[in-house]
Image (cartoon, rainbow, N blue to C red; front, top):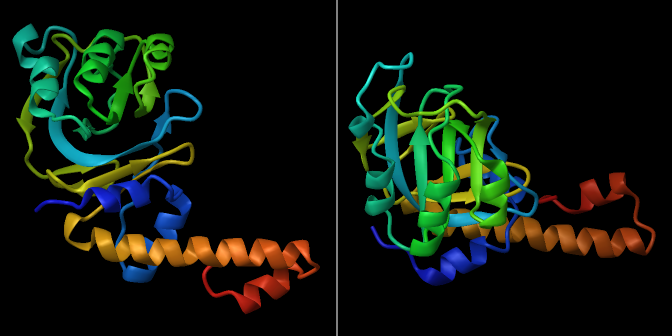
Length: 216
């Protein structure tokens, strides 16, 4: 299912807490748990390329089974690579992969697990969100099981083509078939926020604003 670029552009102007409000109203759980940006100001909006990994002790798998290059090859410009690794404290990704992905135009990375080389990721301005920042190498510890099959990442089901949004507060997944409705609902919250702030500037109290505006 395709997505209108106009929707993606509108989503770039909406914060994740506002989208989470809209998800609640519509009845979806799309908020991924405890994922954090590698640097300040990082934001992602893009289509999901999903990756399922499994982790074991050093030497469990061959180097070829790590397949970071396959992840990058599977993604198109504007996509977000989303990796499910059950919160493992092992690095799925680092600076060189970030550099390669940035050159290709990939929008960012989300990992329910670890990444490393924070300084390089920030230097390359490659939006990266993970559960852990850890130096431990993934080679022979991580095996890629599938690419572009449905996954559970940080408690949320993500499918190839779903829309991923991340910012300084967190990361969430918008089901592709409902993304337009979610965007419209979120924009209502944004509009009420702006109206409420203007009236609070003119003397309206916070309690009064909560009563007057339903979507703040």
